[in-house]
Length: 254
Image (cartoon, rainbow, N blue to C red):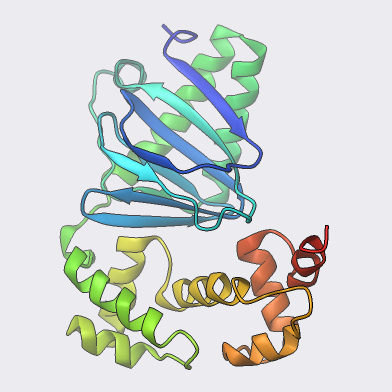
């Protein structure tokens, strides 16, 4: 069962969108570089480097690229539903909260990949049990009241895009969602996988990147999108794109 119902792939640089599809397995990805976007039937999930994203068996989703010129690197483990249930002593699990940010889980993920590479069934069995047992606790933490509905997110997303060069504040966004600021931050993070401010930074970076040309003054672009200075812009750009804005600009000349 173990070798037939468990596999993984490594993607060094995804270059194409994946349209709507589903897997018969749990699809568990560890993001190493860039930002992964998953679109579900009624929502979206954005996962940065260092986080794990999960789709359930038969869950329809698509994987559009945030930007075709940015770097997206990740590993994905596919675990059949039968194997997951067998590993957990017959218990069925389902993930509604589909993102995990935990260094220990990341280590277990990589440890399981190493075991798969060695094709050692006993080692795989032991490491899968540890990994699945830790994952199980995250499948129980979902609370529907913690999430934004899709309509609210769409309204907030539109507002952000229309004011992307402004200095946005949480109070404005919370008013759109018609909830208090602290409740808004929690609901946004649970729904989207990022805090509101990180999401705004990400959108600023991708919008500003589209303006960079070979002769562009990068400092002017940084200030245009309300970054405090060039160092802040460069650090944030590299976080989401994988390289600095200067290196990206230089790549346009090649």
